[in-house]
Length: 80
Image (cartoon, rainbow, N blue to C red; front, side):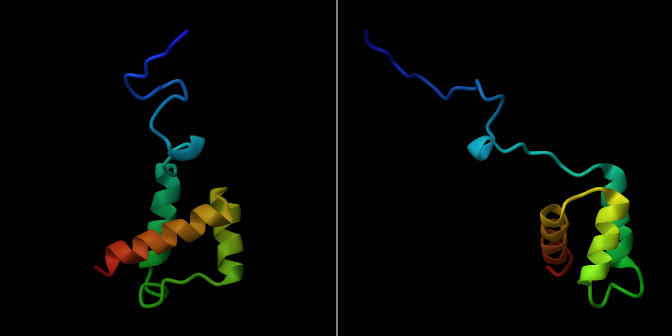
């Protein structure tokens, strides 16, 4: 038997790298994070402490890696 491959397989459900899902954060979580970052006490130094990270994760339900990535990406966007 011989097989001919003519295109990408979409059996995994999309074009995600290594099977990871590409899900954005819920809108209410994004609003919470934006409000935190842009608040007067944080806008000059938008780096949450470990305690603040724990509080944000508890209130939003996101994981530490998601939180860290969101802050990295949004500091880049704001400081362009």
